[in-house]
Length: 349
Image 1: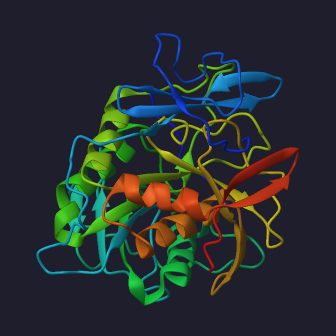
Image 2: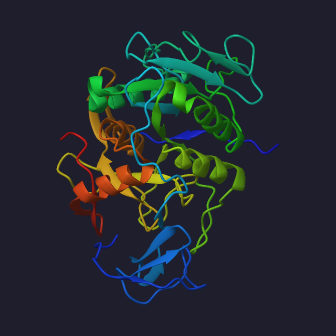
Image 3: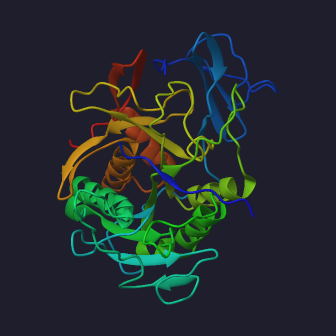
């Protein structure tokens, strides 16, 4: 099995109000179009013609309608607050409060020696301080604690955090290897199976890979992962992913590039797009990517993704599409790094 070391991210055109045009066979993500701002409906998705570099292409589209007609809020049997599932390395529950923690592994085992563990201790790993100016390899697990702190800062008492750990720990204490598709997919399936129980309305996944191609079809879409994202969307759950920190203004990382995911990039504290933030036609929103937490200052699209997911849950409108449309309606203009966009959501409002 092809394994990849998990990568965690730490360090556009104007939307015009134009009538929809009839769908044609040529309208698909990455295909050429002729007029920026033009929209086209294909199936249950609406594509928009956007500028990518010097070319005009159709973006990845958004769902025009979901097969589920009920738009009333989805309330869990216990009437819990809306929750986000943070899929990440590990979490120190002495530093940040999480409503529930779970471990989902494909090959290596959770603390209980099994492939899945739920409840206290499932995702816990304490914050490791640097030792004699040499950072302990286990300190890399702090990423999950930081993203949880940011989500807690933005969501406050209005949301719950469900933490899903998917990264094993090697014998030297460092993060182990994982399968780039199956481990994430296993976590998404856990969310799907437990969405009602914990009232999960969004997934925050600040992880990814630069194993992408070039040109319009650069995204290595995998059907199993894409189907999991679509199935979550059908029960009103958004899969929100970090765009990546590779200074690429045309392409976001995998799996954020999968059309049904919500890809998030970073702006700085002045509201300008960060030069490190990946972008392009597959990016959905920008959010603040710099925060001062109990573990210090953090900066990157990981931070922006966790913050945006928490804000999504805090402002949840009863369905995926209603919430997506609301985020678009409150989005502000931002520019920087040669990009102008109307997709900046101020998560601190």
